[in-house]
Image (cartoon, rainbow, N blue to C red; front, side, top):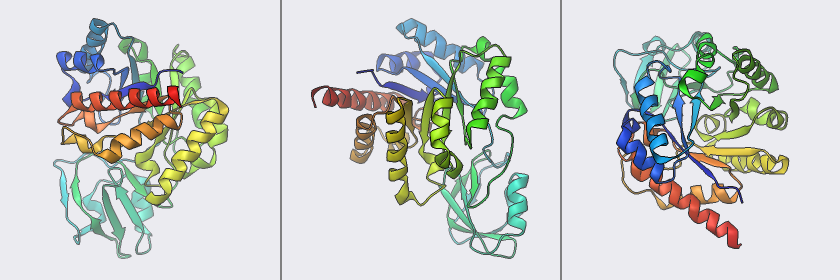
Length: 328
C-alpha cells in the first residue's frame, strides 16, 4: 500500500525554520503556497526556511503552488469589513470583480452571494443593496461566489504565467489549478509549463465548481492528481450534497487509477484549539479509507495558532487509517 502524503500550507504561522523542522519530523511531506495572497518573490524567506528545514530533516519535500486562475476574489481593503447579520450595505461597499458587479446590477432579489469560502452569506434585495444573512469579518482578497454565475476567463492570469517561469528557481514541484472547468483549462496549463521548461511539474486539478463536477471524467486523464476542494465546492451546491460529491469523485478517481487529494476544513477547529473534534479525525480517517492519496490542511497551518499540533493529529490519524486498511 502506497503511503498517504501529508501536506500543510505555508504562511506566517508556519514560516519559522525550527517549527518547520518539527512539522517535518511529525510526518509532513510537503506544503502548499497560495499565490492568490502573495507572490514567490514576497515569500522568499518562507520558502528558504521551508527548503532548509526539509533538507535538515532529510525529507524530499513537495512544494505545491496554488495559482490564481479563474477564481473570483474581492479586491484589497484598507481594513477588514465587519459585516453583521441584518445589515444592509451598498453593493459598492465591497470591491467586487467586474463580472460580479455586472451580475449584481441586474440581479433579482434573493440571489445568494458567498464570501470567504462561504463563511459570509449576503443576499440581493432587488434594489442594488445587499443584506447580510450570515455575518463575519471580511478581509481583502477573499473568494466570492454568486450562485448561477459562470465567468469565462482564461485558465491562467498573466501573473500565473510569470510565476510559472520562476518555478525552478524556487523549488516548486507541483501546480494546483483552481476552478478547473474542462480539459482545455488543464491543456493550457500543461502548455504553459512546457513553454517555461517545467514539463516535469505535477499538475493538480482542483474540483470546486459545477463545471468541474460535470466534466470530471474528461479531467481525470489530463492531470496527475485530482483535488477534492471542499471549500468552494461546498459553495456550488447545498452543503448536504457535498459528501455525496466527495464520494463520487473519490470513486471515479479510484476506478481510473488516478491519485486524489482531500482538502479544506480537515482540522478547522485547530485554527484556534490545540485538539481537534471527533468529527474531524473521523473525516480524515474516512478520506484515507475512500482511497485518498494525500490530505492537506490550509489555514490551520498558514495562520492558525497550533500548526505543529495540527500536523501531528493529521499524521497520526492518517497512519492509524493506513494500519486499519492493512489488516482489513
